[in-house]
Length: 391
Image (cartoon, rainbow, N blue to C red):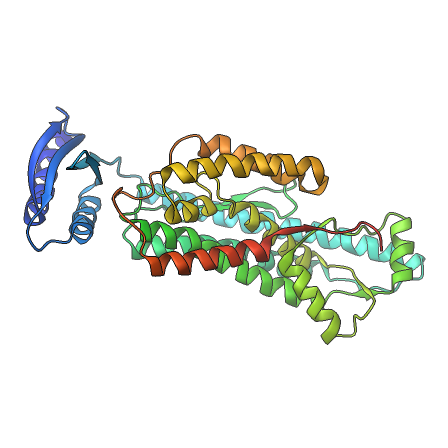
């Protein structure tokens, strides 16, 4: 009974703000107060996008979500009561998951370092000298190489969400001991409502990958140049005994870093044996490419939607998925990417992506150029390049 009394009061408070910015008429009302639709028209001197932005902020504060759309020539504003509460419980869950993920990644890093050292011991018996890695130190470095880019990625989303007043959950890390080579399946942030305008969606989508890719490249560069390098002949012997295997696909960024490193260090014609931290950063770059695909509700899907429209985004999601599936038959190294694309499309690409709460919102040319350029650069840096299997 208390909630039923509270709803009309909050709705009346929202209508005061709507009335300051729009001439409005109630069109549809749910008897239980869960949603209301208004026919609205901006008052003289009120910019539609800025007026809606103020209504959006007040609605979120009061526990309502609002969507602005158009039917014919008529503007329709819909206010929907949100399901609030359980914030403390969600914060507790985020904390528990964070601790569990640190432990999961740390244990995985320890196991990876021990496995790396076992290979090193066997290389010694073949006359190949490679320095050992302290398992504890290796686990700590591995944990940093995995979690810092991943958590910074989600923190980038979260901070933009806070800045744009988009209701979003705390970053929730996902521990995955044993079943993931990184000890985690990454982290997620749940957007509880569409961002207020298309510009906010664009920056929300690009912020995470921009930070994550940058940090993963830094970790890879540092880990790569501190990894041991052996001669070609030693590498062939190790491969013959099944101790080493060449990578089959390489993110373009790592290819560029290895090229520069070979000219600035003593690597020369030697083969670098990636330590666990370098391999972790290597995988995170590949994961970022998958996340940047212009499919459904992936980060790349959000960015691509902000640059196009509902119809183009939906068509391109399907084309991208089919292209990657077809490519996996030609380049077997990319079969995982085709499988991921299908899963992403089935989970998030079947329904239309409306973009923002203000469905009439448009992205300015300057923002389109900036976001589009960053998006293309990130795709290129993380793009998996098949490489020859022989040395």
